[in-house]
Structures are given as structure tokens and as C-alpha cells.
Image (cartoon, rainbow, N blue to C red; front, side, top):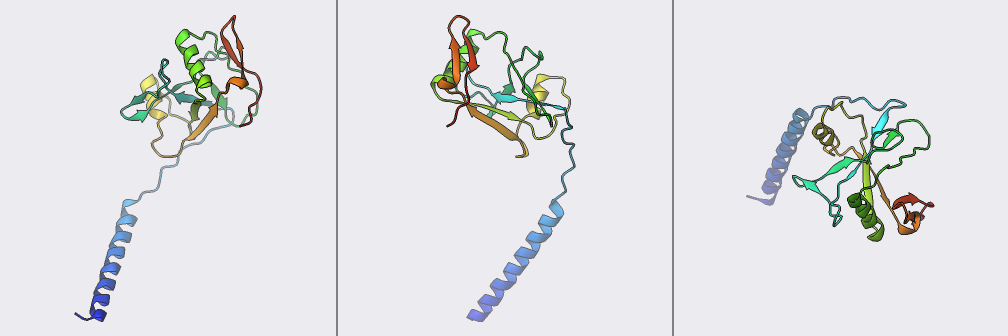
Length: 173
């Protein structure tokens, strides 16, 4: 076969390949169903990476990083929540810091480890169980946002009498 014949065959094969590819892509794609967004004043739950209290290692479930709700705030009796579309200060006092949780906070400070938390980009469906809540906060569609920060020793005030941890000033990295 001549060079022109090879070129003609390759060109026909490429046209057939791209035509088939375009037809397959066109028939296999379906539009995403619209999902409702947040409404002004709606609570947005904050969940954070789960870590072991002794070593600070990430806890995984089925090879996926595990997120748990933020500890319960005294002010609301619920885990930390942000309020959509409302600009306000949010206080979240943790009433009782048990020994394992205190050591985990120490791990964040002494190892300069990030306290990684996230919020869902759209409202979660109502869920009666913890398992359903955790399933609903997994990043399955690539559309979740994350809140990441570092807790530095010079950002915190330690009170040795009550073993409390409180921010003392804003940190500029």
C-alpha cells in the first residue's frame, strides 16, 4: 500500500473513532438533577477529620478519611454550626474537655498539625442516624468545600488550673 493509501486509511479510522466517541458521550451523559441550596439563616454543620487521641493519626473507614461532627457547644447544645448568609460572631465553648480530647488538642499544637474541618456545599438531607449523617458528608461528587487551619502554640492561652485552651490572638503565617 502506498503512503497516500496509508494516510487515507488512518484518516478514515480516526474519523470513525471520533464519531463513535462523540455518539457514545452524547448518549451516556445525563444532566444533574437540581439540588436546593442553602437558605438565609439555615444552619451549616461543621465536621472535622477524626484522629486517634494517642498518636493523632487519621482514622479511616473503608480506605476513606473519617469525618465526625465538631464537639458540642455549650451555647447551643449542638455541634458547631455556621449560619448561611448571616454575618455574626459565633461562640462555641466546649464545657468539658476530657483527658483524651485534651491530649488531641496538645497534639495539634505541639506537632503543628492542621485541624481540618469541612462544611457541605449544599444542605444535607434530614437523617435520623449518625451513620446516615456521616454518609451524607462524604465528598462523593467533588463539590464539598473544606475549612483548614492550624492551631499554633503562640495563638493559644493555656490556663494550667483549668486545663483550658483558648485563642489569644490572630496568627499570621
